Length: 198
Image (cartoon, rainbow, N blue to C red; front, top):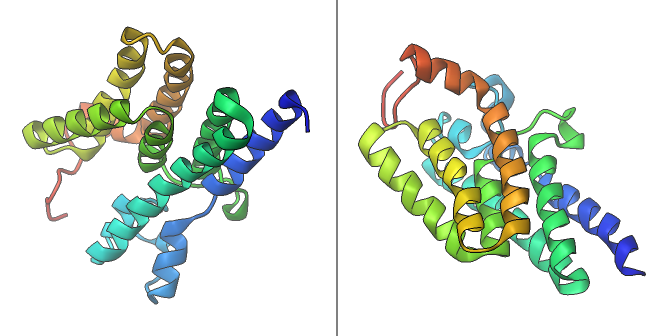
């Protein structure tokens, strides 16, 4: 297959990996109620945590990260850097809008980290450090993700990775859109804090 032809395949590979709903799969195997009927109805690790199963939440976080990383590595191995970036975009879109769940998926933070890990791991480390620092000072998980995602494309651009910076600028905008309700609650002072009983 030609290079340009594989780019489409890479996008599809990323989307299929990204659309694997680990939160749904793991909670169903564990016998909990439908994840979409709990809390925010989201399929990500934060909502899985609301089931009270910390192990399942951790497994969901890891699964949602690694599906992005694996998609990027596979596409990059067969198609090079451009294919890897398209797979990253596909994986992120697949997590946000999985075809299996009526295009209603997660908010993308774990998969964002996963594709970043596959494309340029130092930036994933910076993301994690910023997330932890913001979470420690504010105790808002959503704010921590938003701040870290905002910084990521700037970090990539600063170190000369212009194509990656452009890609993650797009992913960051999508991540902000998926967190629009969280942003409203942050502005209103009603967003739940980490460890807060609600």
